[in-house]
Image 1 (tube, rainbow, N blue to C red):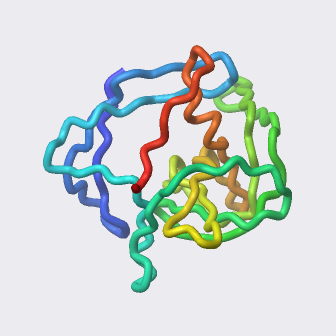
Image 2: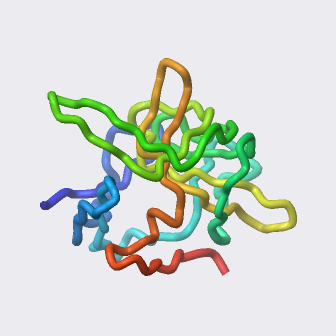
Length: 176
C-alpha cells in the first residue's frame, strides 16, 4: 500500500509539502486498522503539538502525555482539519460499532463516543483533555468517524492506538 501524506494548512487546499508515506499497514485482530507514516521530509519538522491557530492566545497546545479516560460526562476537545478545535463531553466507551458499506458489514471495537462537533476531514484528529496545573494537554484518543446529523464523534482511545500487534505499547512522543 502506497499512500502519500501531505501537510495542509487550515483553510487551504494546496499541500505545502510531503510528510511521508505509509511504511507499515496492519489490519490487526481487534476490528481496526493502523497505518504508520514514515517521515520522509527533513524540511518538515514534526512536533508533539496540537494546532489551535484560531485562538491567538494559545495557537499551539503542547502534548505532555496521554490520559486514560473512564468518566461519562468528562469534558473533551478535538482538533480537526475541517472544523478545527471543538469541545464536548464523553457519552460512552468500550462500544462496538457495526456499519454497512457497499454491502459489506464492518465491525469496530473499542470505540468511544463524544458529543463533539466534527465533519468529514476531521478524521485522525486528536481528542484531548486539559489537566489543571499542566503546561499542555493530554491525548485521550483519535477521531475515527463523525456523525453529522447528531454532532457525535467516534474515536479510539490512546491505549488502543499505541498498542502494537503483539500487545505491547509504543511510547508516545511528548513535549519535555
